[in-house]
Image 1 (cartoon, rainbow, N blue to C red):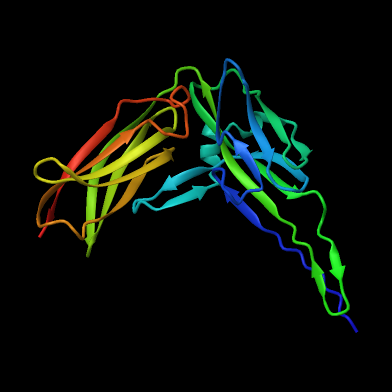
Image 2 (cartoon, rainbow, N blue to C red; image 1 turned 60 degrees about the horizontal axis):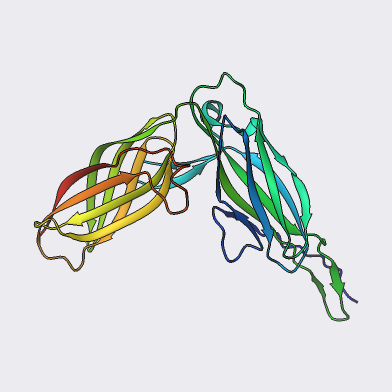
Length: 276
């Protein structure tokens, strides 16, 4: 006597960029709208061989960097949401739709923000969910019962809304270093200033006594509030001596156009480090 078994596998992936795994891709991965236009668009493309059901919603979150440089995603900060969120003012057209294989859809976003918001950059996350149109169907044989796998893919991208005069800045407080064998961990404590997030890159360099760069670390990142940046460097092949640690914050990123980024002059600071 066969046993009835129904299995559904639900796989939820949160992606911040287009990946090879995603059946549905999105471009761009960061969308910028200002108070003059109030409208923006992004493209959803179905690269799978199945019709996909697409749904779009919005939520507020930000990346937080603790005193040890560990990054976490904060979603439940009501106070910060009241100050910086644009979620309640954003609408998507269409919000729910189907995409046949190789089909694409332009999604239009409208921001209906009140006129009394202070100058600055507000933000939201765009969550674009996709799932095959057909629900999981039980397939029974004489020996066993199997099931089609239903996959939900959630891709999370950024929406930034600029109002009036926008500016950003970074103030470096201290650079701390910790050595663990051949690994050097550089911790840079900073303050985020201005009325907009820092969207840019951080370079951590190790210079020898002649000023030559012997090690470097790099990351493109988004900074919303004060925190600590962590960079690890391999120093196993360096000779004994005095070195200079240099940390630089710049508002440039290869994935965001220069016209969209709120710019600032590069900021850097140095400290010394001894290998003996």
